[in-house]
Length: 274
Image 1 (cartoon, rainbow, N blue to C red):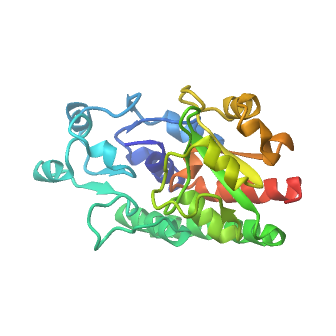
Image 2 (image 1 turned 90 degrees about the vertical axis):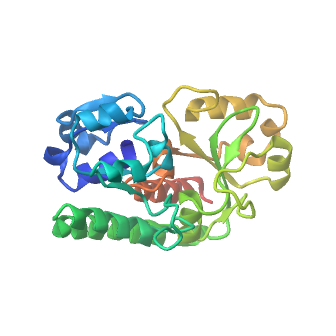
């Protein structure tokens, strides 16, 4: 029901068993493009329940609760009554007994394994996780000399910037790399910040989410342009020195891309000498 769930299934070699996909937020990973092109696209954003059921799925998978809104696929309990089990990521699950409050890489890997097991391909799941774990270990090792550096994770917005607080992928990456999240004290996952407060915190490096949806302050380029033109942020040491690291917006959500974000931040810190 959106790109992160789709790319997990495609990474497990399950394109042939996908009745449909929806809500592409970024260009599909190049290595998955051919497989993605073989899957019917049900809607640009979320398809309505009628469209979902018309595809006759045996199973629905989403990593966001919004997929099961009444104007999308509909509540999971209603789908279950129709004989269609609807899976929701452990990081968005309403049930404290089966969900997780904060994103961890162990949790991401556990979800990949669980989805692989549900589809009867546990070996593929283990192979995918093993590869991701090796990449994660390498990226963490590369960043060991940069521990203590403060990072501002800038997701979207200009008049009101949305930045990363606790519980999300940026927090998990910060912990893995031993860097300090400039808004690590914020209890929300994506709190609304303000530029004066950000200026006071004066982060060493700014991580930019590169979003392709085309809104205000979405692309990494538009973020840099704004930061350099805004009188408050133009004075930040990180802005004046060009200490920016760009990661794809979708990699900031739990997915097979999240390890790539660790690699990009680790490599960026090394390049910046931070």
